[in-house]
Image (cartoon, rainbow, N blue to C red):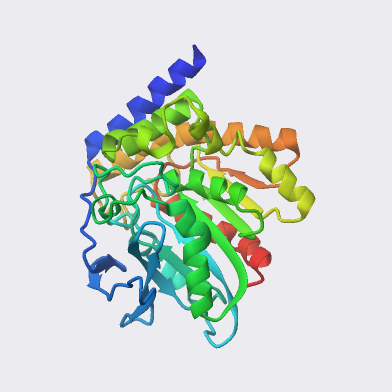
Length: 362
């Protein structure tokens, strides 16, 4: 009964969010959202797998060819404070829109200013909206992202994030071989799964406001609405029929024993997990620069974002209990207030930095 109620709650929450308004997906045919606008870049190819396009402000768009998807992926790259010295890489991932809309780290946070004096590369892939940044079983041409229409290969963003992007980028640039993987919302679930499946690959994992469940009724309902209803996907193409093995295999709570083994092997990353509780906090105000004195936008953030964050709080509590049972060390930041919105994710970026920097030797 409780599982059914939770599933119903998640459906109501995300449906409400969709009704308020979703930013249209921006086409990625040779442009990438680098800040608050689209800019042209040169695409990588199979023959030329890493192609750099400098931006006027010193950042780069680095296009990387994905063998698994047979398509290129643009990445917004910010150099470390001293690009001549070896530095770790912070792979900072967008949420449900995949950076194909205006809901990006570059447009909605102070990442550019915050990282300007840090000795770390910052790399943010652009693309993969609604993909859950996972490896799909079958190609689905109906998902609302160019990676569903410009290639007939199944989306394989776990492979891209865990293998293809780090291998290609770190071969080309001056890095120290250590890396972090952090994400928000939808993708905050995925980064935990990626870390579980690829021991030793990342030394830090940051999960900000994610629902770290996929095989439970509530977790499935969240994915069904975000990737199925909003993204247009047939979820059987992602992990197979639900319930099923594919859903369990991609559930960070169910697969938490993999972290136990990593703890024994000495490959366990530093783990930072955060969530608000849905109550209005310091970023629910008209003078928030993202709100721009817009009362309907404030109401949307406070009400819809509040209920969504209450749901992620529920999932995060389940993850925390499982980690506690298995004695998996992690920092859980249960905030006394906060909605599902960018002001709090910017706070997470700042709050987790000391832990990230220590783990990757920045």
